[in-house]
Length: 279
Ligand code: C2E
Ligand code: MG
Ligand code: MG
Ligand code: MG
Image (cartoon, rainbow, N blue to C red):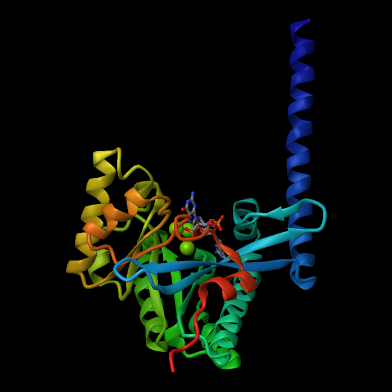
């Protein structure tokens, strides 16, 4: 009796596993097609200077309009794209498209701002990454100083390669930030030697900054450290006024979060956040 039940359980389990594998493979194939069929699109989220309230930059975030599953957030396909290697063509599409928007907006006479693009580890490890990015910038005609790449602390797992890669990227004239800072395992030694421009404090620390003394201490310490290392610092996930006031008191440079805006499609971003050059 029991054995039979276990058998049923077991076959249910394997059926579920099989389905999961099937849908993985299916999703992977869909992704390949989706890239050709232009089912992916970008949303932009403003990055706000906390002393002036002015928008200083924007982050491009990818979304997938799946023909059957509907609108998918990055959490539903980026990990799969990383496993399959599809993140490389997808990431390149994101880079190029983000640069194209930024160039178009500059050409239309809006105040120039920097666009931040997330770079996966798979992309970061490409030996010819700098050349690829250089050729995208040339093709689009965007000045490198209006592009910022967001990498994560996991790049420091191979510090020599990371350093070399970062120096090559920096030589192009683009900016580099460390995303989700504080959640990885980069040591202070690396922080001292990496040619980076900005730390983005992970939103898990910002979330409870008003009720958790440890989070407040961490945010304040990262901000102070960034100042001393002459790095810019951005707080992610700013959702309310109290968090904003706390961050201002710490002299945190920039904030990004729902308090200012959630990520929005390009046309909405253009009308809501871009401003014409004065004069
Ligand atoms: P991230 O780079 O740390 O991006 C910030 C994420 O936090 C975005 O989620 C954004 O919508 C969300 N967010 C912004 N403000 C708030 C807030 O106030 N509260 C809360 N709760 N969340 C906020 P999203 O767009 O779902 O992206 C999730 C992650 O997926 C990104 O985290 C990034 O790691 C990855 N991702 C997104 N686009 C790309 C891409 O083009 N390439 C790569 N490699 N990764 C990407
Ligand atoms: Mg990011
Ligand atoms: Mg982040
Ligand atoms: Mg991230």
